[in-house]
Length: 224
Length: 401
Image (tube, rainbow over all chains, first blue to last red; front, side, top):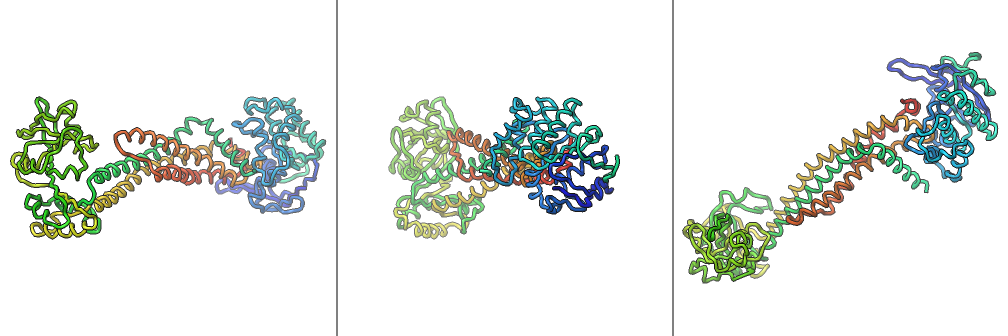
């Protein structure tokens, strides 16, 4: 489904070039449940953002269903992110001035094609499925961390994406709540057939996935 | 449908943000509000002044030719000359020669001077105007009580006066009571034979109008006039009368020492002067609009920094650079237009109040400036911060704390 070929991403810190990700080739298949495992600063988040098309690679190609999208315009990439990719972050990244419902509906505002479903109905369904329907009209800072992460997952699912990219989704949660969130992601993969990529530094978390990719100093390694 | 949905969301998002920063929003709009208020008010007052002066001139009868000292209004090409300074003073000899011009129906001399007017124990400052009976027609004066003086009053130097409404009120309490009373000007006694209706002109309302010949001596020792009005019977004779008048006067005076103008010329000169004054006023008022615009830009930059993370989140869920640009531009335009509209409403209320005593007016130009210019300011000063927001790298934005 998504294929990275010799992808590099470097940043400039002042004059100095920092290679966050270098010469990475990997393929993520449809309906896969995989993890990208690496310590902090290893480049795992950058790799995830590259897969999520939030960044152009400095070098190499990103193929989406066989098509090279690495040089697509901002407009095209935004449209793909909107309909194809769902992000879940460590710090939830909800917009606090909007209610839970408005946060979940946010991706529909940026749909470039006419939406064929009823956004409110779908949001209701997702809220029910994730067990937070009673939090619908709350503001994010008035609900618990676990609930906020469920809202973020609902937002990621709103446009019916093929792939969910979760960056340390349990990082800000206690063990029990974290486990619940991981279960939610596993269910999505199993029941809805959504590809889930879990980015983490915890081996225990990564162990729950079917395939593990180790990353160290911006490169994929065999062992961690 | 989708587009509508998009705009509705933009506006809703903008208002959610304004609500969170109420004080900041109001202060930012205040800049534009004051700018629009000052521009609209300056235009309104400029127009009011123009209307006022125009009314004064239009209240003079039609088909009027004015003779003034100096190059006066509207020299050649309609330019505004050096004015009345250094001109001549006209006298009775001029009156006689002007009377001889064909087409001239009547000649009205005007002597005008500030003075103290006394009656009994009351003493008020006002004006004394020496003229003849026709001046009542030329100046559209009407008596509310009593009568005006006649030609024979002028010839026999009758000590009679027709009072302006305001000065009569000051001296006699009820203006109508003035008829039959006696006033003193420069130690001369005059019998009040009439009181004029209120004109709304502070000079005419505060004047004692007396036969010009009566002023000769104590009040007008030079026996001179400041202005002479010629009433022309037929409109088509005006050009001929002007020509003849110049001919007659050039026998006694040098060119440039006097001016011969018709009412229409004066009005066009006034219009010209006031359009210049108005432009200058608008230019001055625009400075505050500019400052207001910079205020908006400043706040929008702060807002972009403050909402970096939000921008990152929106980008992650599929917002394009253009979407982000539109979002911030919408906010600055709403701020600016809100300020502009408030300024316009406030200015309208103030003008409504002023109209009680001054013919200020808000015209279409003011409304245009208020709404179009404030929108333009919102776009112009909002576009730089909005561009910065749009160009933020999504990853850096989303990681921003």
